[in-house]
Length: 249
Ligand code: C5P
Image 1 (cartoon, rainbow, N blue to C red):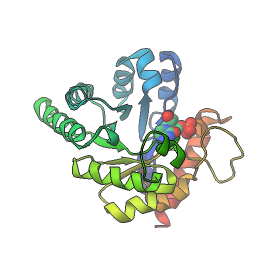
Image 2: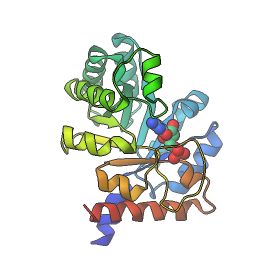
Image 3: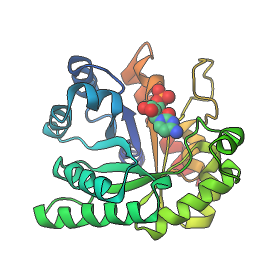
């Protein structure tokens, strides 16, 4: 029973592969394959090394979240979405603030491309409001809603456009879950363990246990694993926290 729960918990852990070179990324993939559910490749790593990092992850039978947060005219994002699907990734994202038409065209292009190549449907996520922005930042760029209101508004557009879910900060999980139901996927970064005293750039943090208990489907974890004295042990602890969170629901 606990073993099945641990397996389920592991599948919910996404490791942020935040490296700027292939060798370092590959050493993390070798170490953590089988211990996390997915590897997140972001702008830094993808720009530095390109698609071969995706191949290296897939060659080991692991899953990939390509975190490139597309935001452009609908035609461009739709074409990028197709290119992403051809890379055989499992999850990718765009900015909801690109608008309904951009999101709809990207979702349609991705789903059509999957059918054409008989691939696996990726989870398509919308980024609502970056966690680095507060109400004053939104006002500065001309938005009158609060961050919470804007998150809900953009999540609604994303759901209507056919996105599978959203990337959401810890503080938005409960509101999103209660408004969008259980099928809407919520992926949450900014995870720090309860006892963590580390000071870094993540401000609105939550433990893996709390995030899962509140309703996150996946959590993204980088430095709590990569800077731990024993990364594999840190990884195991987080998986157990996720399992406890699942059990408490
Ligand atoms: O090291 P840490 O656990 O903070 O890594 C979090 C990862 O999640 C990073 O790759 C970061 O880019 C990403 N992320 C985030 N906050 C968001 C969206 C993504 O920290 N709002």
